[in-house]
Length: 212
Image (cartoon, rainbow, N blue to C red; front, side, top):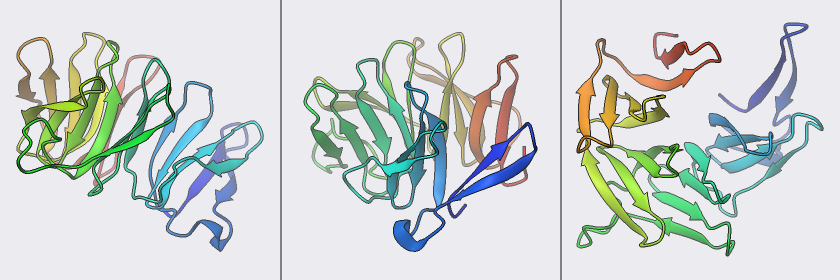
């Protein structure tokens, strides 16, 4: 919720709360992601921070102070972020340039819905963004988007071992097949699905308004 707590499984105790002062107001935490370098992305309502679990140092990453729901990295180290009503951000690893993409009514290649909630980079290095009404495939070379309507808000995205994407949505879970024309199948059950993850044993966990 309002910040980040660090849990030590050896002692089963929480021993850090960030922020512990007013230096980073509105630090409501939307999502935590592990970086390629082992550090932790912290997505908040006040932008993105990076936490070092070894030193416990936390510093701001994003050059903007936008509400950020989710973040991911491509193979070359470029960073992609879903930033609520401020659209989608792309930080180019080669140039360091930050680009913001918003919906443009008369541009069919712009992002289909400006309100972005989730993002992932799959095993083929493809960038997928979940919005309020669609799943979007971003082409960083052409700066364009391919739209796959969902008619529901895509809150989280997880790639299965078979390459299909599991979408956690406002009305339950779906499976999206990128190799079969973008086929979208509804899974059993319903309800707001905030996150989906697979543990080391291959068990899939989901979180919702009713718990795990």
